[in-house]
Image 1 (tube, rainbow, N blue to C red):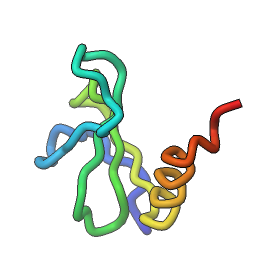
Image 2: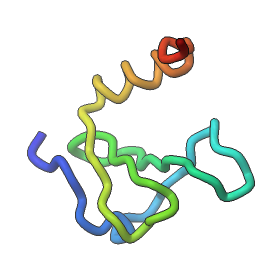
Image 3: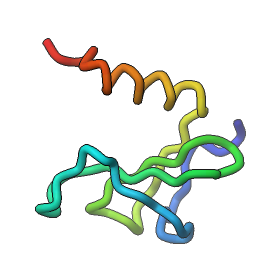
Length: 73
């Protein structure tokens, strides 16, 4: 993977909010599917800000752990 960040995430179309996001406009992340070098993730409150690009395998592991409540203490 060559790109680790996207300086202006608004330059890309097709962002979707996390299914765990609330509808009140609060904090949430958005992801972009089918990006060639990984999974871009951005903060929905700053759409023109940067996005981080994670390797697909790492993002998949994170999502699986989140769904399994592995981060709850």
